Amino acid sequence: MTEFELIERCRQQDAKAQRTLYERYSPKMLGVCRRYISSREDAEDVLVEGMFKVFDNIQAFQSAGSFEGWIRRIIVNEALMFLRKKRLLTVDTDVAELNSLDHATPLSIEHELAAKEILQLLDRLPTGYRTVFNLFVIEGYKHIEIAEMLNISINTSKSQLILAKERMRKELERLEK
Amino acid sequence: MEEKDLFDLFREESENLVEQPKAETWQRLEKRLASSRTRRQRRKPVPTQWLVVAVLVALFAIMGVGSWFVTRDHELLLRGQKQFADLQFLIGSWSASEGGVGDELVFEPKNKNILRGVKTVKFKDVLVKRDTFVIENKGKNNAFLYQNQSYILKNTSENVFTFQATDGSVIRLRQSLDNRFTVSFGAGAVFLYRRM
Picture 1 (cartoon, helix red, strand yellow):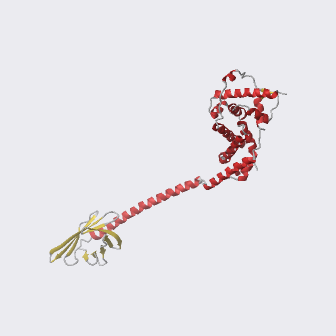
Picture 2: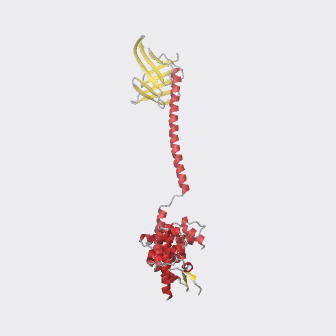
Picture 3: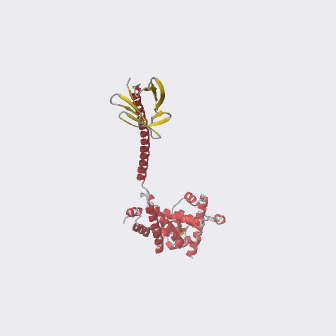
């Protein structure tokens, strides 16, 4: 079944098509949830809520854009909502740590990282750092957009990213030893 | 090994970050979808075009009923006016006399809304009784006032005008074929008048 047919059938509330769509996208979307939420249980809760919204709002999807991108945006929003609800989205900036950093040095790595290792690295970051990191590096949002989404200032978004990078560097050093 | 920027590496590798959800995750979602489907079926949204049709039908119905009332009101008014005009024509052209012995019925000259009649009963040129009656144009209902009693014009057929009071008593004004004009008060008393 093509993606177009699948969407059309889901719009008609076809249970079989909904199952197919879920099977096609849920592993990737659970991966997205896991990048934001370290608990697997919570990530699956967010996946259920997000996918339900996907099916509930599928009429609103404009066929011109990427369907996967549309689902992803819903899932990311759902994850952010979860973090907000659980009050996990605290974005405290360690000013001392920030001042000690050399911002200009690019963070490079000598060995390849597996997806699992990426997840482990992300899991070690505080929620605020990880969220900004995910939104900036992986989803490709700009600082101004992140600031709006998380209700923080642009500078806070930038500093969170720098600190996230620094933590990553430390974690990578530990990993390489 | 070539050095890679961590951000690029994350970007590339995040695409491979897939995890298979537990089977029960789908079951939970399926349950929610099923209940949502039932809810949707229960409150099936009315398509917009049907809403437009419903509004138009309601509008036409209101306009129809309104126009029926206006028309009916107007028709009643016209009918009342026509009846009165007929009465004016009928009675006004009969400044009548001759009836029962010594009786006389005189209509006042035409008035726009009131026809007044005077009935006198004489015995050997002595006035023994004098009654007046008024037929008043009240638009929809022409009323005949006689002896402080109000008679409402109930119906007209040919040249007969029937007025009825609340107590059931009836007055009829009739133009006979033999050029006579008859006013019947009550059940028996009939006064006949002829054109002067």
